[in-house]
Length: 144
Image (tube, rainbow, N blue to C red):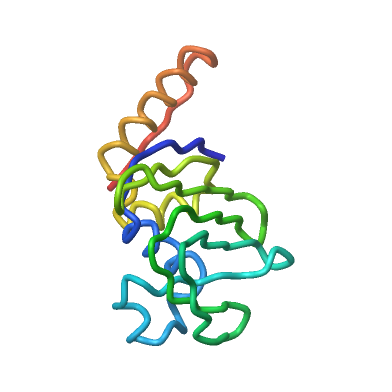
C-alpha cells in the first residue's frame, strides 16, 4: 500500500471514484455531470458522499447514483479493503485526499489526474534508492 496525501479538485476525485467502481456501466449523462457521484453500501466497500444536499437518482448493479450539491467530503473504501481514501473540502471545490491506495488505485488516481506521473515516478525512485541502500544491489526499473 502507498500512503497518499495530496490536494486535488472534487471533479478529479469524482473521476477516480468512477474509474475505480463503475466506469463500464455508468450512464453517459451521469459521467459528464460533475454533480453526480457513485455511492455504495459498506458491505461492498463503502463510498459515501457527505453533502449539504443529496438526491438519489437510482441504482445500477451495486452502485447508487446521487446528485450532490456542496460536497464537504467523500469516504472511499475498496471492496478488497486495500484502498481507503478520504477527500475533505479545503476551499470551494479544492480538497485534500488522504489515506492508503493499492497499486490499481494508484493507476486510476493517475488516470483521473489526482496524482501526476512525475510525482509517482519521483516517489518510486526514492523508494528504489532506499531499497538499494538497505539491500545492497537490488535493481528497480520503471518503464513508461
